[in-house]
Length: 92
Image 1 (cartoon, helix red, strand yellow):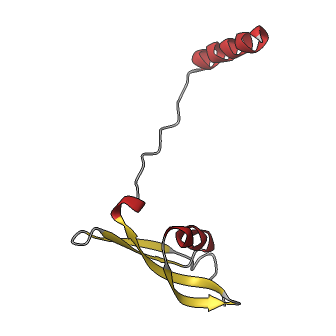
Image 2 (cartoon, helix red, strand yellow; image 1 turned 90 degrees about the vertical axis):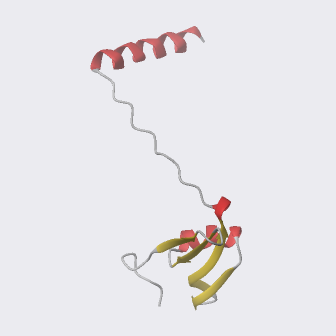
């Protein structure tokens, strides 16, 4: 039986001595993405589709990105931006 949403997980463990990531996943979306990146060992399957997998990724295949902060604008700044946008639209 497939994992419930509450039970689904993906974990990554980095081994600094080998420079490799070990990945384990029961999240269908992640399994599909990982299958395009590396060969996966299927731990469990259901109806010929994997529901739990394990694999290895190189250090360069995993990146960590900063999420940009949402820009906070005052009401005056928002109004000025709306005016600039309106002028740009009317210029076309």
